[in-house]
Image (cartoon, rainbow, N blue to C red; front, top):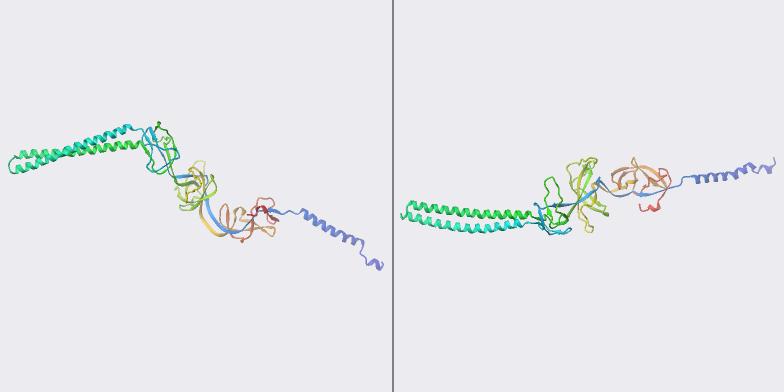
Length: 392
């Protein structure tokens, strides 16, 4: 072989030099084109805040009035005067309804006239008793001077005693007449329906001229008037028996209502029922009453609204927390770090539907994945933050 040919690369080597970069480029291109694309994920930062442990009602609760009276007159009769309308506000003691009672009014008038007669007769009988007492005293003086016999004195003394007894009997008749007036007035009062407290007339079932009857024992009848004290309202709601052990009087909470969207009203537990409701085909529950700390002013709050309650029985402030939706089974979370999702086991404290307290495994500022149900979201996957959910 000549010296000139020995210094030149062979044709095969030159082909390798040319083909090798092309092959590398093809392999890299194939890998690049076939590799998994980054998944878009919704993220939330680990931050400090308050986490509350709370229990909620199992079924919708109801807004109720602290005082509500479904009233009917104590006696039956025809409605002579209906003095209020639906929706009218009344004060305590105000007359709401009167039944026909002319017969009782006549009885009261007769009793008052009899009282006047009895008082006149009593005055007459007592004057006679006073006169008989004076005559008996003069008879004693005369008998002491032997001007009359002892028998004459006995007659005068006995007459005075009889007259005094007549005076006392007349006074008794006066008291009886007063009692008859009181009986007549009680009868008239039974024909009058008064407001037991201040409130608003919710409903009236009856019209002037119709008959109103009280409910016989065991037979409910519609009340004549339904009176509600809307100055004091609360929510009655059932709590599952499993959660009832956490609830006690005075605990703080919140009330929400479907009729008043987007608002929560501070409240506290006013009563916990001392028994468990065991109704067929329903879970066992305990009835809890939550009172408003301050009644809503701008909102038109009505008795009968459906409401939900949340009772807070424990609270941790200024702790690390994440949205509860980021927590997977076994207390695992996916952490976004340098474009890759990492699996991390965390320690937890208090938890509710919204937030979970983190005691270990994460630091403030770490980003956890919320969109766990998206395809391809798993540990080791490349990811991109969802720009449309940047507010999370």
